[in-house]
Length: 93
Image 1 (cartoon, rainbow, N blue to C red):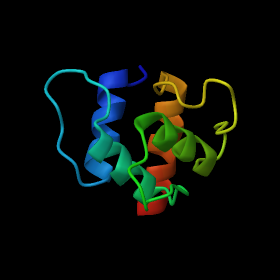
Image 2: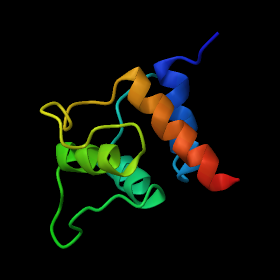
Image 3: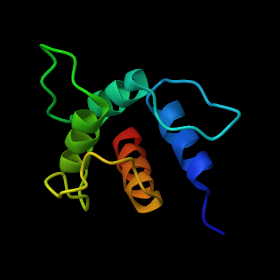
């Protein structure tokens, strides 16, 4: 059985040094910043990038995801989370 969206988000949070959440919730701006760092996403850190800008950067940095699409700034879907979790697993090995 495949993991739930909540389980995937928590796996990603733990992989980037953040804490697990009891309830299912989207990533905070701080958690997205940690994910960007972990996947070497190219984000302009001179200002304060928005959550959509950070999600676009993560999608562009992870193989198999489209960072240039019209909905690239939207919340991560399950397939996106699976690809991000896999990329983080690969980096940890």
